[in-house]
Length: 282
Image (tube, rainbow, N blue to C red; front, side, top):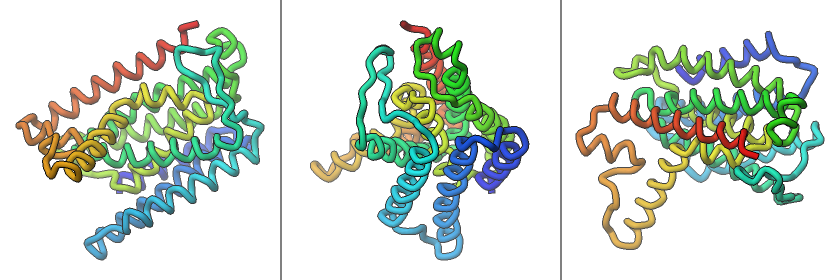
């Protein structure tokens, strides 16, 4: 129910405050609702049938949805197919048609990374909030010609994205009030898949998706630990960590949930500050 609360709050406030004559708010809401629908179906299957939808089916639905959203984005806007390299602002790589595949990878990857991180009370949302703040600021900067020129970042016309981003911050704070340990409410897949994908789309629209790997480094690390655990176990029959994702490893070491959540949150804040610092570097 927590995921439904967040999605509903964001959609209502976006409809109230965003400039709906522009396509970006609609695309972000579509991303939020469509990925939330996939997660909601999975949650409902877990409740009604005691087993979620098959992993391959879930991934295929995410990929199809990502292609549809990104296709609409490229059709409705004149966004360039280039990517910006952090720390090397004057270097832009034009991927051409491959940009669609890259963007799908970012969207689906971020969605699943947040889903993997959502394993302890307040952990995923505590790391998402600093990222939403960071990319709301980046989106506003990339949508303001003067600020974008001063920071030497691509002007992406994403000022309206900041409205949805800050609404996500507010809705997430409201959710965290009840999700902090011991949690009274959970976001489920409906929330984690939707929020991860929407964060990724914000970064893509602002042309700073590579900065997501910095600001969202915790999500990346959580995913890497799962990949490492699976591959190492298949090769050797042994485990690197007591349990993956990595937050469960620390939990089995005896760390309290509150300590893991607090420390992972601090790490995320530091990474988000590092990402914002790169905007000032020439």
